[in-house]
Length: 180
Image 1 (cartoon, rainbow, N blue to C red):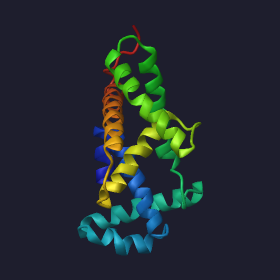
Image 2: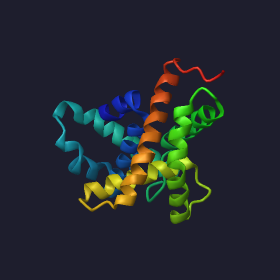
Image 3: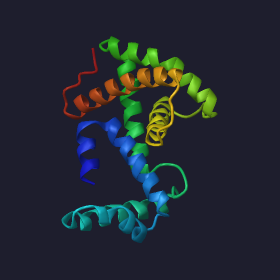
């Protein structure tokens, strides 16, 4: 929970990837707080366990209520993508962010290719980007090899999302001036 709060304040992209991991961790434990307690929560210091049990319990309840116990993402996480999409559109529409536009257009061919490959041509581009990063994260956790082509795509997508996350942080602090 502390990790999620910290990431949400510092880097929205890392926060979203972390929360997707949490969703998968909850699914791996059958959306069962007792299993989560035994497999996850009990590994933390005693003084943090009550807060963690409440946090994981609330997430389990939300996942059941929203019907995402098998796949999909919680509305709180989908809202992050929606907010990022809105900012993304504003940044592209402005003439004040040429480096952002350049990063986006550098990543775009990879995004198009990924969307064609995964069959989700109608999904938001940013969701495709996050799915690619999350997929590579999972491959790395499994110590599987990442092809040179995938590494190149992830490098472009990471740079683009990093810039977007930075602008999101500035926008949240009221430091981003979008209008010309």
